[in-house]
Structure formats: C-alpha cells, structure tokens
Length: 337
Image 1 (spheres, rainbow, N blue to C red):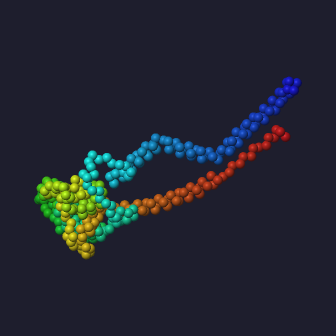
Image 2 (cartoon, rainbow, N blue to C red; image 1 turned 90 degrees about the vertical axis):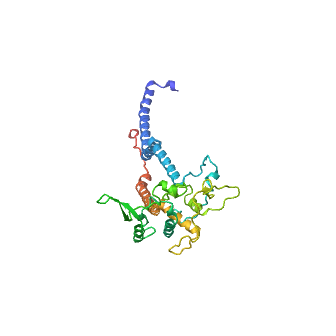
C-alpha cells in the first residue's frame, strides 16, 4: 500500500508531522521545567549542604573539635571512657583504687557545701598548713565563700609579710591584707625537705586536680592509714597506706578524732575532718566551680529558647513556600482548529 502512494503525499505528511512533533517536544520541555521549578530551591540548598559537608574546611574543623574535646576530657579526668590503659608497672605499684564517694558537689547542678569549705579551711589552717603551702589562693578568695570580709581581714592581719623598700631603701614587715597570698610554711624547697626528712610536701592548691581519683583519692589517703599486712616491710620513717603508690608514704597520719574544735559544733571525727578538708581543697583547685555551673544552666536555658524560636520562625517563613503547588496549563494549539 505504501508503495502506491505518490511522493507528494509523503511530503505533505512530513510537513504536517514536523511542526506537531516540534511543538510537542517544546511543550514537554517547558512542562518539565515547570514541574521542577518548585524543587529548584530545595535542590540548590541540598547541593550547598553537600558541598559544605564534603569541604576540607569542614573536615578540618570537625577534626580539631574532636581532638580538642578528647584533650579537654583527658585533662579533666585523666583517662578516656571505654579505652584501656597500658602501664609499665603493676596495679599494686599504683596503690589501691579509691572507692567513689557521693560528694555533694558532684552533680551537674550541685554546688559546694560552703559550711564544709569553712570547716575544711579550719582543718587546713590548724593541721595541714604546718607542712603544705597553698600558693594559688589569696585571702580575698575566701571572702563570700567561707568567711566574711571582716573575718578574712582579721586572719590576714595575723600574718606579717615582707614589703618594701621604704623611703630609706629598707625592707620592712607589715600586716597582711586581702590581696596577699597565703604564706608558705617554709622559706624555700631546701628548708621544706630538711624539715620533712628529705621529702618535699606538695603544694595543695591543685592537688585534687593533679591526682588520679581526685577527691576520692585524697579522702581515701587521709583515712587509709593502717598497720602493714604480714610480710610487708616498711623502712624507718615511712608509713603504710594502701592507697599511696608503693603503699609506703612518708607523711604520717595527721587526722584523729577530736583534733580540731569546729565553730559550728560539728563532731570532729576523722572522716568528717577528711571530708571537710577535701571539700576545701576541691574548691581551692576550682574556685569558679559554682559560677561555672550557674552560667552553664543559664546558657542551656537561653540557647534552648533561641533554638525553639529559630525553629518556629523557620517553619513560619518556609511553610508557605514548601507547601505551594504549581500547576502548568499548556496553551491550546490553535493550528489544529
């Protein structure tokens, strides 16, 4: 049948089909552009997000943040959770692991017991200050924490400090003031070693942060003195304490029941004095503890409110755009009529 058609008829069919196919192709392309016009903003945002995620700057930022978080956690707690430690010495050389005690300030929103800080300072002053210094704490740090300003001024004035030179170029003695730091028990390191059989008493300003186990270790050390077990030899001048590395410590037991008399009439048992002085030393190592938690709570509340507001504004602004529907009605082909 096709072979009997004249050539002119075939040319006419081609001329009619050509414009129709071209118009159909252009209409299909325009419809496709209209169909995906509403998703162009979403695709551009998605591509921008993907490029941000895959960028080297993002990778470097995440790496630095992770390394900083690990370093910060390690500096605070000494070890990482769920990661084993490798030691060249045995567990016995490190001393007995101290138990965990329920300190009143250990919670996320808990503050120091300031009455315990006051009692702890009394224990430090009457017992510990004979050998150990507190170089990083000034008298003014006690104001508003454990004592009033007048009480701290009176305690500071009991100590004489070297000052000068005066108008004649001479050094002189003066009473202490709030800006002075607490005086050390010895003039220098050599005098400290000579007065303690060659052992150097450590400064207690950061002792809680400087020891693995922190407050638990200090409390266990102060209350852990006992007679050595059978077969354990202690050389002269040393004392057995299972919590100290090597189990032999040159510091003798210093806390006994009734050693101090508290102003608030709290029973001065050995455990009570150890708890109070450890609380005081914990505060000395981190005086900003209470203020830090207050600012942290305020920051959590503030940023939570800002996050909720930003989510609401985002939904309010974008809900109209994301929920819109675009319908394309192609124009009628007038050539067919």
